Image (cartoon, rainbow, N blue to C red; front, side, top):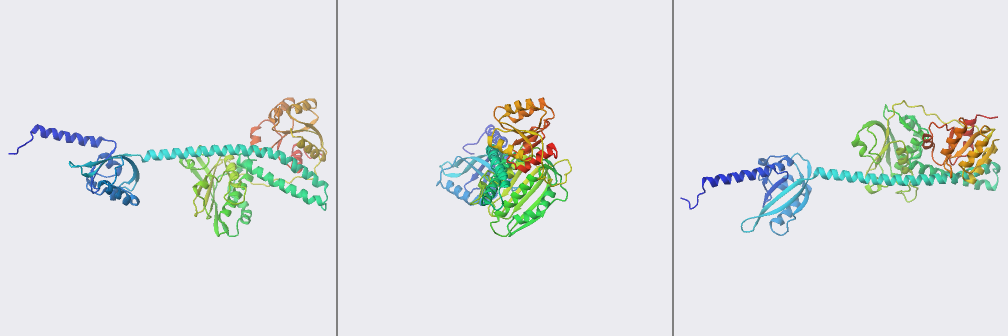
Length: 531
């Protein structure tokens, strides 16, 4: 008979303790994993089996590292475990690593670890509890991405406000330069030594004006007349221009959708987007042979699709028209991609870096968004998404030519707070037979208009002035005389202004800087052909 024989009650108590311990293992909402000194699984609870996609009987005794650790990390983890078992390395109580489930899914687990020892203090394995943090990490990463996108968007919007303000002020200055040069050229003979100087001033001023237009486009104030437009028609119309705009080593390919919804857009601005993207693609080839591909299409975008784009995760879901420009050029790293839409950023040694900034502003102004896919050595793809229109596309028609010999008659009130612009406008108007009254601000303009409301045939009114702005002046003039003809002038673009003054009886708009011929064309439109 044995010296010690446990009673039936003791055996039953041990069984209950074992069952209780087993239930604790089963209901635990963490992974419980025990490994022996060889790295073989001696315990894996229900939660662990659920996450790893297995049954405990399937993995009991199997090598943990060869079964569940990603292959690229396997040897490193094995070496660490061997040093722990040998007592050569102190155990780290908490760490994270990835595991591979039996279905091949990668999960990230946060582990807490303890070394297992026998009665003599010899290390015989490890006991670990693990928490699956894969989903929480993804949420954190997405949150960080969205926060970074919001910061970046706010930065671009701030730069856009700055760029728009600078462009507006520069357009006022350029109005004086371009207008006076144009008037001076009419009085200087083609053989005069001064002619070449005037022509050079005019060319420089026009380049500065183009730069201001790019800045306005970046600021989101670059749209003009919006209509339902067929994007395919615009691309086809531009084919010859695009072919001569790219490197001779570049091959241009087209893949245009057979059927495409219209978009509500300004054709001129869309042409600028296409040309800027094509120019950027050509430059990325760096004088090497390559391909530039232009594709169009339509797709239904959900919140996930829009959330991955550069500009507007808050755009409404729905149908969008896509313009894609892809190249086989040098590509860009992630840091460069984050800066390409900033004004004056350029990867080239020399260059203004405003092409893509203008693209950003135009797309933003059309309530669209951009997705950029690029990596060093594998080219770049720009995808522009614009909301599809329910209206059919209108035919694209060129603007009518202006009659250069037009002469007008009547009294014009010219209102501008810049002395030079007032004097320039007076000379322009008197040249075509108009009589001119000048006002330096809104209050003076109203005083003059109240005195002669029926005599004044037209008012050329600056939008931004001290004391009383153009908006208030227009409103008051309409009270005095409902049918007054007012042409509004601004350094900003027409779409921004006309939307703001919709339904207020605005007769026309001139964007500064404007040429004399543009002023005459607008007067001809508003007043008629005159004599």
